Length: 320
Ligand code: MG
Image (cartoon, rainbow, N blue to C red; front, side, top):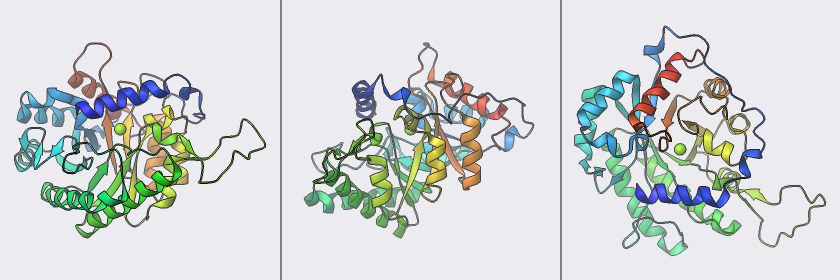
């Protein structure tokens, strides 16, 4: 978790400042208008990374609190060697079920012997990475997951590196599919950097035209649709200078889950139009979304933030 957090932090620093001015035209703010009497039927999902260490101070109690807030689906983070955090995974599943929560998804980043957080892919390590996925998939079948999602982008300094990553994703996808799981990729904002094809010169007449292809688009175009799907993080898509609504419309066949995220508590920044996002999500037939919250900026607990996010979604008339 520390690695992931630091990575995101440093990635944010690399690109902070200019990305918000991107093409986010369709993502203006809106607020929920009518309190819904059907709030209890809403299938709110939560990425448990949002709670950080607070989740583990009393796990069974904390899970019941989440259910009381309105969450019913969980997306895990922190899987490793048969554990979620420091908790045996089947014990974790039982506690979730006892609280009325279902484990739907899990974020997992592959590792190999000697490299606990694998970020640089080379063709020769593919067999080791496949071994990792075989074990990891078997564990997640036991957890009852629907999705297994890779959340962090391996290094893509060149177009060729991005294509190699796609090859690894396809292989992970095959292993997942054989076991009845959906393999997916979750974006941050660095996936919206552009890469030029090998030998491609900067031949564009318009000096202001974007040069090259966005890594996210390279991933979508070069992975097998029957093996690899995408979990679109709407916040990071905006931070990457792109419109999540446009992505949802353009790639309705590839995006199968969403991260519903804002700067902090949902709906407070004015940066995202959640009404448009949810409407398009339902139109696309997407059933699964997970609230995600980074560090609360105001000193309140992560639990308080996650509770406010649930309240926002329960009140929102556009959330079914
Ligand atoms: Mg996310």
